[in-house]
Length: 222
Image (cartoon, rainbow, N blue to C red; front, side, top):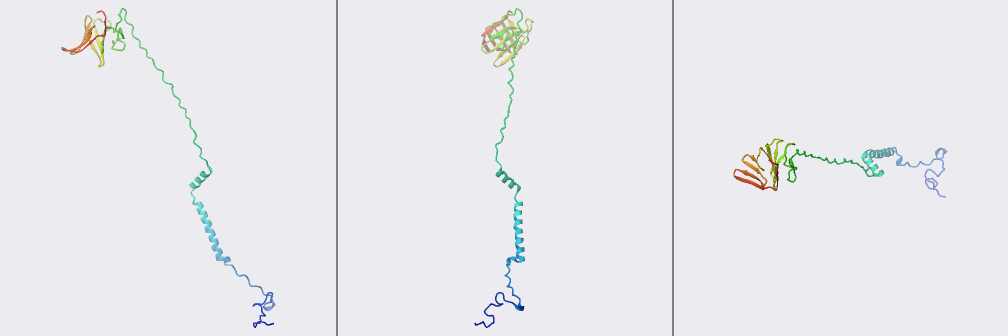
């Protein structure tokens, strides 16, 4: 059997397994190589990285606005309901009751003749013109196509009269007309009003301003 010249007998350096080392003690196999991940510096670096990641996650949660969280929660977990219906009751007062006004026409004095003109009573026309006081009787009433005239007596004062006329232009009242038979004349300055059974004539100076034929006429005995 041939041995290597180095005297190892063909075994690797250190001898074969179970060989005895110097001093006659068994020789232990060499320890396995250490992993670089078990280095204290590497472990410290990994721990620091984990802490940074955790800190970043916590910061992200803390920076989320509270409004957004509330909005997301409401949008995800709530339902929209229709607004409640509000019913209002309006109480209306009944319309006012119409007021009826009754006009009482004074009774004519005893032995006072009733006028024969339609729409007139013993004091003139019911819708005007009409004698002023309640005891003033009409002594003459006339109507044309556009005018109405009434000659009134002041109370029971015979011979004291006043003239009231009404036309589309307005009304007029004149004091102290005179009477000749069934004709009365009242003056307003230079203008004279002549009332007769035949007409109402208005004269100024020598000019006739109006001559309206009578449609109805009545006068009391003079």
